[in-house]
Image (cartoon, rainbow, N blue to C red):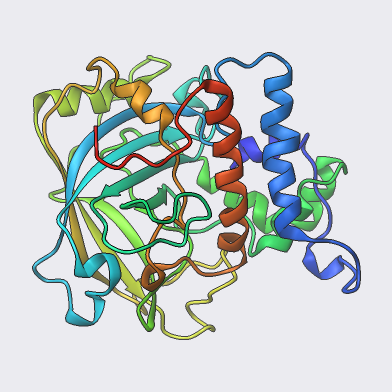
Length: 340
């Protein structure tokens, strides 16, 4: 998310508590305007071709796989998506950085999954009847701000010193989020934000199962792409998807995204398995297919809906950004009915 701060010209204001309660400050629209109008459209106006995403612009790899509910998934978790499947999946690994940024720059990583063959309407604002659902992960289990009001405050035109002074915790988390990852296959991926699971509330994580050995990054500017390509050429990779159950708002808070849910208090439980067969991710058209896909945490069933104010903002910002990019690039505005 450091790219978000850079695109905002190092901007910041005081935390949400300093915003007058009766002001016209509207965080969800402000976040959409920041991502789409101030960042994405400005880059396009300067000649960016093809048009890129607002964030997570550097694509490392695109792969196909299969997601299945785990045999050990508790009955109470077999709700919505986890009462269906197995699903064909296409996935995209990325960094929150411009495409020419060296992987050594330590930017936040993203891992997005698109499930095909989902039964039931989703909560997506675009193509809600499409038979797809998305799962979105980052390599951090905390976010750099607590809620949408704090996130919107960053897009002001104040100097970055103000952000550092008032949001010291946020800056520390940003530094933590920018940690070096040696491999996309060995990183630990988190939903970061909570989701409903029927009547329950959970956070998800995705980890290699069985564990894999780390790689030597070497000097390549694109070592993350090189590594995942090499691994998948030589064999299959599998990940476990696990859920962490909400306890109460004091120890597993819903709308304080900077707070880590302690695994000792809320242990993880196996929910599903992602199996990625051996493949050549350099196959013709595979990278372009990934660039054309759009992901949103709200493309999911009601029983699995995202929770919290940051998720509410994403419901508007993500499809708005995708529409701009797809329209200018001549890509389909519709969700794919079937996997490539």
